[in-house]
Amino acid sequence: TPWNWPMNQIALKVIPALLVGCPVILKPSEETPLSALLFGQLIHMAGFPSGVFQLVNGYGRSHVGEWLASHPNIDMVSFTGSTRAGKQVSLAAAPTLKRVSLEMGGKGANIIFDDLIEDNDFEDFQDAIENGVYEVMSNSGQTCNAPTRMLVPQQYWDFALGVAKETALNIQVRSAHEEGDHIGPVVSQSQYERIQSYIQSGIDQGATLLVGGLGKPTIENDSSSISDELRQRQKEYQDGYYVRPTIFADCSPTMTIWQEEIFGPVLCMTKFTTEEEAIRLANDSPYGLTHYAHTYDKERRRRFAQKLQSGMIVMNQVGLASSSPFGGVKQSGSSREGGVWGLEDFCIVKAVSGLNGDDDDDE
Image (cartoon, rainbow, N blue to C red):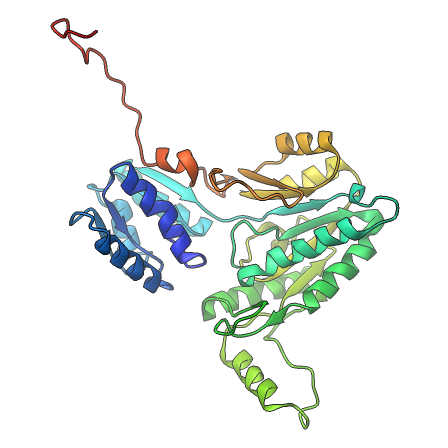
């Protein structure tokens, strides 16, 4: 299981497997082992039989994860994580031909149409842009189904950039130990460095840096008059893996930041002129987890539901039902979690004939 939503992903995998009668070995991310330890305690307190649930901590590649995936006595591997790691799991499992269920990365497109503007009222159009920025920055950008590519009509490009920039500037970055409406640091130094390399790539490849950028957040203030509280916060920024909320404009499909999953608080924006161009830009990605669309045109929503290449499509900020299947297509994987599909993922179909013989009373 991954580190970005640790307890959630454990529950989505372990509980359905146990419900259909499968014994489980859980290997959580080495970055977030404590959630798994707590879950194991809950399993024990619930009175599950010994051996039904087992917990093994350790590293993935060339270690516990690879050993489990390749072990001949394990019938199935369910994996959530990066596409790179998912390929490694598949390779390790291939010699035993076991079932591999993969839920991997995403690069969601968020298409916002100008039919949200009615009688020169921009409120809904502005709300869609603001919400799109917040969705990307949530959890410090470490969410696989975040709408990290925003597409807006060319006619309202400047307006959209202004709203997006102001929204990002109002997002506070503070310690995750503090309560409040802000984002915290990313999970590790390696993740921080990965995000920084993508930001540098966007700059090098010619995207327009609208807000944010390289380095850690800074407090803009006269150093002679800075308060003790702000001075302490600046020290936290330097000591932790904090990333500046970043937006790139004028992104093109050839740019690395448009094609690859950054997994940080970084939004890529571009403009479109026609519905067909918007669909083409949205689908121009190796991923296909979740796409988003904002339009009041019912027939357009139907067309997008058919033409967008993703396992999930969110229209007009209406969230998917709790029992909906979660999963993608292309390099986002092919498995489904949640609802009845999450149960069926751990089952096999068995055909049986002659169960009731001629000597049975009931036929």
